[in-house]
Image 1 (spheres, rainbow, N blue to C red):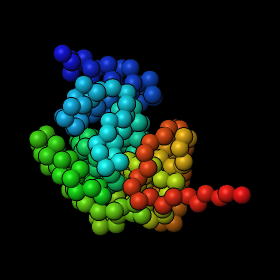
Image 2: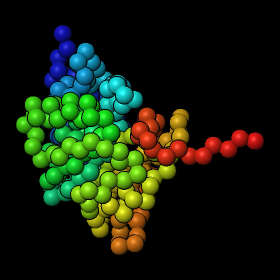
Image 3: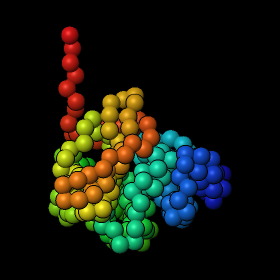
Length: 218
């Protein structure tokens, strides 16, 4: 039988910390939020494994270490209003909800969004607004945001996302084409200024309906 507490401890010590997630705030969140409450039925044994977990409809739960690095880069604050693009199981949503004032999370799939709502409600999380829609080109409904995290990869980052940030706001996205993609941090420095920082290399499934980079053949 799986020892959940030991598995969660092992995830932090063997996956999260070695991947340079050292912010105590993030480590505490990932210790406190029960990831097993967000995995699909039948996958409980993989809740703390270093792997993606399929959710159906082309969506996955990202591996814990990728979630940790993205969350750490976002530098969340208790006063932040956050946007998550790609709700998935609601696990990252829950982490954001515990670290931010308000979270808006949008998913293109209504069934996946409905299950995420059940998962969040079961954990007593009530500072999240889940929405169903296509946010591949941006989601301005409740802008400006202090934090934006995009959970599917993009070949290019639409400008609409960074324009939805508050001054000082942070956006974390994974950009590129498999097998090599790059996690980036975009920070809004002024009304018309943004800084871009490369974080780490990885590869995750594409955000549904994300614009594909033109491929040239000769």
